[in-house]
Image (tube, rainbow, N blue to C red; front, side, top):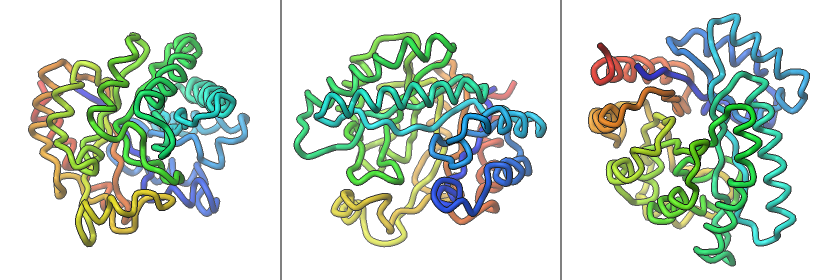
Length: 294
């Protein structure tokens, strides 16, 4: 049976920018949910001091929780080799953080879709950078996971490998047992593509999953496209309660079961707070029991 983790999507600014919410407070809040683990984000203010890594791990373990996944946003598609090397070094630091927290999966991305970077160059930059991080991750027994991503909260441009064909080409370029896919069905919808088609194409490479559901508060996907280059997520985009949005979780879990998926599903939801997260936990527990239960 896959395990269920939760990510503090609703609390990113308080945890990463303003400091209005401490990591200890978030761990205590998450412990009220029926989950097995917590997905952390590398930009949490409280994690910037290495001395806090073991403290956070102990706090989670006191609640019977693990920290299996680290969500990181390296930007590997910059045309400047020095910038890319700095991003590789930063990812290695985050791998150290993941290991100290007891995690087994550390996210990578391709990078931002800068207008001046070609398709082939971007794929090459990203692949070379990820491969440069692999030995460091493998020394800890950590798997690097690439997400079919929309856009980091604090980026200007959307994900270079947002589109399915680019993402699949990048994944195919890196053939390592220490590398796999973190599948997010909602991000495929934002790319104007079919999440079940992507799932079928990468199902044998999936090692973790982000569970989310998306809806547009106003306008259309086309309106969203026109706003992609604004810093952060477009205002018209919302994460809804899982099971009430556009994703077919029966079809998703049916496919994952067919390839023997037995890893972590992390809830990336709850923009309106804890009540939404509780609803999403209930929905996913029921679906996971249906498809993966004995």
